[in-house]
Amino acid sequence: MKTNSKKPFFTTTQLVILGLMSAILLLMAYTPLGYLNIGPLAITFNVIPVAVSAIALGPVGGLAAGAVFGLTSFLQCIGVGGTSAMGAILFNINPFLAFVQRFVPRALDGFLLGYIFRFMHRHQNIYVACAVTGFCSAFLNTLLFMLALVGLFGNTEYMQNLIGGRNIILFICSFVGINAVCEMVSSTILTGAIGTALYKAKVIPQVQR
Image 1 (cartoon, rainbow, N blue to C red):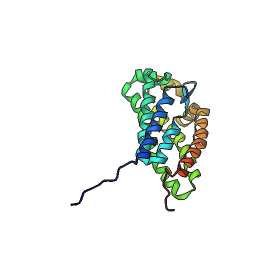
Image 2: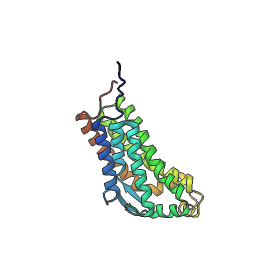
Image 3: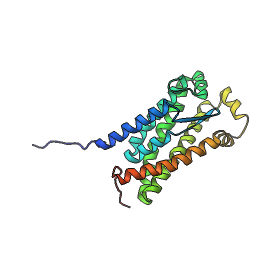
């Protein structure tokens, strides 16, 4: 008599990594480790665990870690795990749209990173693949966050005052400024190093090129 045995979606090691990355995200969200507040925005290092999850676990793992990041980001709008001045204002304007603006970009970022790493892994060495994934993690996080901010709240009085009649692209570039650059540099370097270490530990499987 035949028995159907399904291969688990994640191995035990991968589940441990997902749990560890989620715990790190929570730790960073509820301590000063995850954010460096500068003006209305903050330099966030939470993009790094999201990138590592996408590298080790693929799009679904990246999505899960991104969802944890997005949830903690939204909770800051109501003062849980820190306070976001902008998030509090957006929450007062529209709580549902504030949730979408905080949660969806981070979850989508993690999901896309899984495919970015798979593509890069097939065409580049492991360090370059991980470093590019780290860069994209910070870049996409900023891009998707700002697009959601402008798209969902662009017509509000609060955002109109921030934009001040400027071109949207110029506003986004000037608004994120040095924050985004710092995120991209730190995420590129650290994700490249961590991802390479996981590859050498055989947590990340080799692929045929």
